[in-house]
Length: 352
Ligand SMILES: Cc1ncc(COP(=O)(O)O)c(C=O)c1O
Image 1 (cartoon, rainbow, N blue to C red):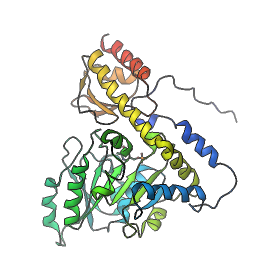
Image 2 (cartoon, rainbow, N blue to C red):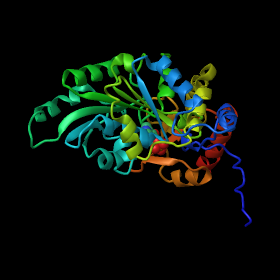
Image 3 (cartoon, rainbow, N blue to C red):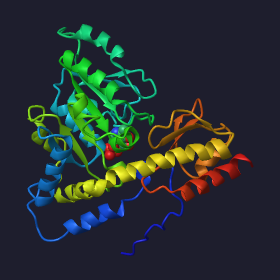
Image 4 (cartoon, rainbow, N blue to C red):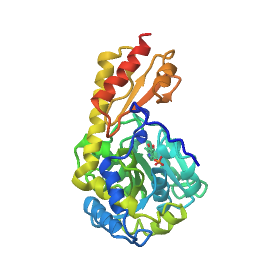
């Protein structure tokens, strides 16, 4: 059989950080783990070391489970801490609501209550009305508040905001799940250790992302205590998230944390988002910045008649077609030159 390998793409994509490749140090870690035979399903020295590192970062009482992807982390985490008659309170922009094909509802059996977001965030004020349902058999029982950090709109919760949500949840016998697909970008913005913005604020379950920040695949599910994690082993397997060759996820995490590669990558992506914002403001007067830039996403309003042409030149996703809002994202390997080239291609079309 003759295979036709795709040609290398010449331009970097600004559609999603998922479009980037693998950081060379991560690829090298996969290669380094690729020798000999080791016991499968996590009983290998790479996984044992990676689990030790997670405890060091998030605290001795935490329990971590590696999974394949972000959706898998979210649904495995949520399923572990809920029963089917519970409800999960979140924003109307949450990935678990908009982009997981109903998997959280299917896999947890819970109902998802969507609350209007304020720049991607929710606040405890919005949660009070659900307390009325507590103890009433006709209503699903509010059990989890799920927030995303950095949010789907690229904004970042302060630790105080997260703590306020966690305090509210715990006072009312609820848990907090944090979708941290881009937690590295938030940490780079806040200049805080990962624990200070999660477990120290009271987060119960964290979906810890790596794929969007230089890993090939693989995410971690971090529970604040062994009690919370009691069923996670079994739920992960039922959710088809147990990797037999787990060492190749674990080895990636070892490289990810070695010499703070995760933070270097996220800092670069964030810096490039700010560079992109400045380049837009100085070179593309027809393009308006739509949201505060706080991580690696830049939301823009594009002239309606030109947007499809711009997308054709370099594909990116619409956010809200009615208002002609689109999302551009930077990655760990975006450079100033990539941005200059992208902006000049956009400029050509906008001025034609
Ligand atoms: C905020 C957020 N959470 C979760 C995910 C899920 O990741 P995956 O596509 O690996 O399932 C994504 C992916 O884009 C995301 O943006």
